[in-house]
Length: 124
Image (cartoon, rainbow, N blue to C red; front, top):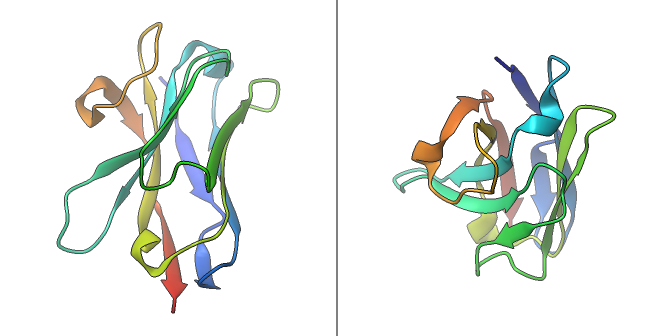
């Protein structure tokens, strides 16, 4: 098992930046493909970005491509999401998740472990 705790959310003006972190417990973080998801009020949860176990393969939703960067530090058991050029439509609760597998995954159903989420609010 792995426990995940997000941090770094907050209120930022449009055009600003935030960096989310996801700290994982245990010594097996490097064996989990990871992902960031978000859910805005009244909307379904959507994948934002995903990353393979080594960090060598990444995926981004079209809506964040070129603005967000997912990365991981397996030595520190931490996943990151650097968010630049934030827009009001990026406002949501952001959650990190860990999957059991060998690739990277875009479907939330593939993820077994979830953090509690952190609120990101972008004002116009």
